[in-house]
Length: 312
Image 1 (cartoon, rainbow, N blue to C red):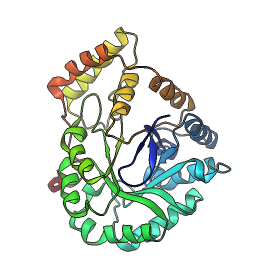
Image 2 (cartoon, rainbow, N blue to C red):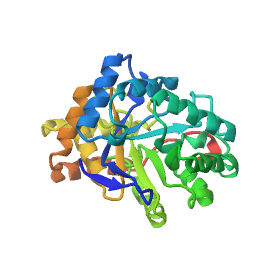
Image 3 (tube, rainbow, N blue to C red):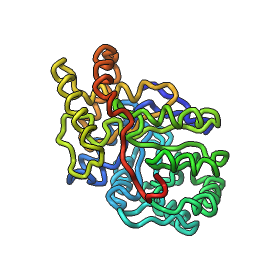
Image 4 (cartoon, helix red, strand yellow):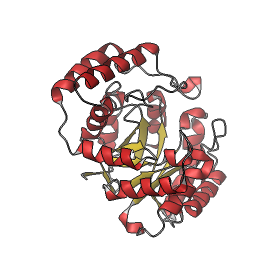
């Protein structure tokens, strides 16, 4: 699989990476065998950057990954985790918790270092703590050799820019989700130029936008406006009428952007992961893409609020 550099970090990531949130049974119950097969299938198809978090399954994802990666040479894959978010309501970005969280993640993952470490969903806390306290603790962990690249993740564009105003010279990368898709390309237009100017790597998660860009039933918790959901259903039907799964087009589109280092997609189903690799080996249908983009044009970049109101 093709790779791209993660900003100036010295790391090269595959254009499609394996998201391990599903290994935390975030969407359905899974078995250890499914977790191990999914992980190995991803690695076998070149998805050798794996993204997880203590939040996923409240530690279960990291534990499953630690088991699934046993016996796999550590230098054959890159591993990213996060810290600061531990449940829907529990956030802790204190310096003390940074050190503790990294220690626990390394134990669960059965490794002595992480390749990427991100502050997870910083929009849920008052932001000054991030640049006044948390970033220095993150830098310390990096200096200790426990982490190779550091950064943060969030959803609101306002939060990205506010935090970058204070720490853009201190970090290696950022992760945004549902922000570079068939329906929403705000990551590219509103953030990527700033990242590129500073040599900060761009990680894009959620190419399927929480199932919006699939044929699966939409989850009840999906926050996108109703007009976005309606456009997505119309786009999915158009793709189906042309013999294409909209998820295929969504994945090809997300991974094609040369300025985005990697796109992260997750599944605990090895068949899905194998299918993704097959999709990426095919050329994108430019005519169908143009038609789908026309459907999404009236709702382009419409999203939702996330985290504290003042951070949106």
